[in-house]
Image (cartoon, rainbow, N blue to C red; front, side):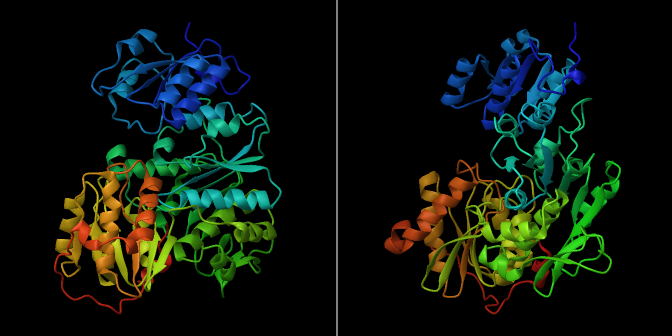
Length: 522
């Protein structure tokens, strides 16, 4: 008898004996397997790799690991298992052979977020606030949760931020609100299955720029995945006034009756918007007299004290404030949340100031959109750039910011594309190419090269515009190695590295911040 998966919409439904295959054994995959075993399902986990710890824990909880190292073949053990359901970790692209196999055999496929939504009532069913965007997701998620907590709401950040939603759902204390960061990979699986339709209290797509094009297959598919964040929203669809794509997503979304469109931007807000008036962040959305009045939320001085004063960070603050206000917290709680907030590491984090040169770690700038915001915040930059470009053309970014570049240091496996962009659009910018095969050598070489290029008044900026997994374990590892190398660069002899900058022409040493940076978003 085929199980009616549409009926599995509660922790307290009958999950016993359901045969589930989980794809992936990272943090998300293990949380899925652990949850399903607890529900009484029969679980196997298929993955190309996984930590020894996770494999051992699978044995402990009663799940089985199936090695799936060959992308072209379906493991016999997985076929023999005959799963009734596949739960897919975010790393598996839609084109993966295992997903094609499941499609051919009519096996339903869920993402981890759909499973979490279905079983969210284990303790008590928290409201969800859903956050996505090409950039700024993690900061906005953390800010929103901080504002909610400041308002007395029992809230927690979860999702793509690093805390699996399933772990938050199973917390024995429970939550009033979960603030869920969603990647485009997770959103891809939304709305495919009856009973699994997520309905957030409030939602936002912060911005949209090309990213993950190889994973999704096209810019349109990437955009369509992001747009799913707004579907079935109950109270507020928050969008970026400076990004027409996000407004169009809201206009196209099927939402619940009474849901409102709430804009945010750096200018004077209209009714139903949040914005800035004479150095004050104001709310003209969540008050009865919004056509004639506004509520003060915080000041730009508050943002400066918390390291949030750059244009893209201010937009993140306004988006978070709109989400928190949609959940019912007061303006005072928004202000208190901002004042108590501190940025997580590797997000425009100053790690050193020496000899008039400031060293800034923005390793979280893993795409051109984020790097654009980061570069726009500084006037004269030595740019450490490169990594996995994920199919995105970096040339427009190089062309736009060439006037502010003292020089550039190119790292990563996709160096050829970066070097070509500089040759075509910024031939006068001095370049150093770091061709170091060992992870331990990359950042010492890059920092030493940057030190030879930088002058007093410059910022040495790690804003790679690419993913990190080509040379590092993740963006945090990349940023940490940069910070360590920067702090130690004065104690090293640059000659030991043996890297000399290529000759470049003149640059505009008086280049200031690009005015367009005022509307850039992280």
